[in-house]
Length: 178
Image (cartoon, rainbow, N blue to C red; front, side, top):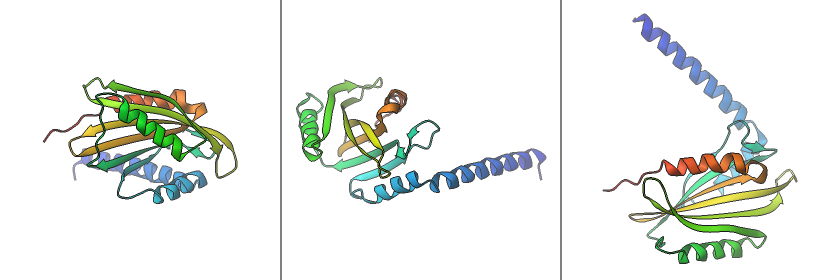
């Protein structure tokens, strides 16, 4: 066997062992267990991806920063003006009366993709009874056959750290044309 291959495979094994160890510690954490249980309650016809942020410093108490991607097939959502964006914000605030809409705006990514953005906050308690103010940033993207909604949820104390990372992620997005 090639000695260089043997070293690389050993390094890969050690890396996978580290990842598995980290995954075990994350999955044994009650906050992550609750977050995973909450994902099970999402509509599988709309939810495409749920991301729990296990990065050091992106969690506050039992509140796990998360991103969820929702797909609404055949939905019409205009980004030509802010009428649909404002209607969506109004619908969100009706469904959660204690929610406060902070901003609604139309924008364009650096690669030219039009997006709609709603930011809002909501006070509440975690499952452990901790007071928390959750900040949300919701991004709407039109695709050929529907609307993709990407929602970030993070505690108020972490929003200045997490929002810029989320914005950078949105900037890397590209739409594939068929």
